[in-house]
Image (cartoon, rainbow, N blue to C red; front, top):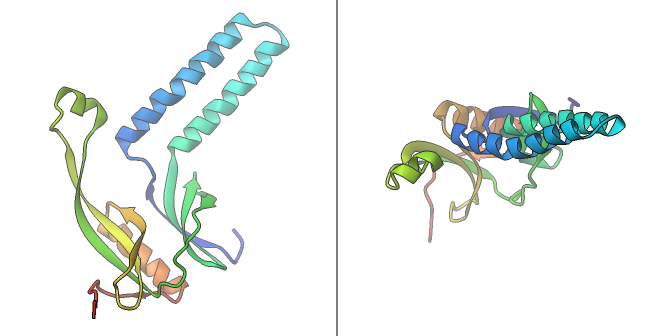
Length: 175
């Protein structure tokens, strides 16, 4: 890691039920790669096996992507990490926002396999969303959503320490 980029890894990008969907999604092409190696011979079989290894590596890497925050020369950004290594960031369009805050929401999420048997079933959880605010708190833009208050506090600490952002309680002034 170079001196210009600091980061904090916060939590998994995908919840466990979304990972199950990804496993199923990645199994189908894997089956085609395996069938391709069975019915081919020689160099083509080696090529298919090499393709299978690359595919499995990419599939497993994608499933274990984590989200976090990255500080670069241009500011604080939402970042992606795989196995502890930085792989990319989203562009932050709200560099003019001087304030950061945490808002707590009660959210509900339907689980795909369970809701097929019971359509009304859903899982509820608290979400701690970090927002960038303007000076009067009349405009807010979500930067990242987390499921744990201690991770949200760590993210706020990282942001205030590594930028000019100030933490404030959300209280809009519409006058």
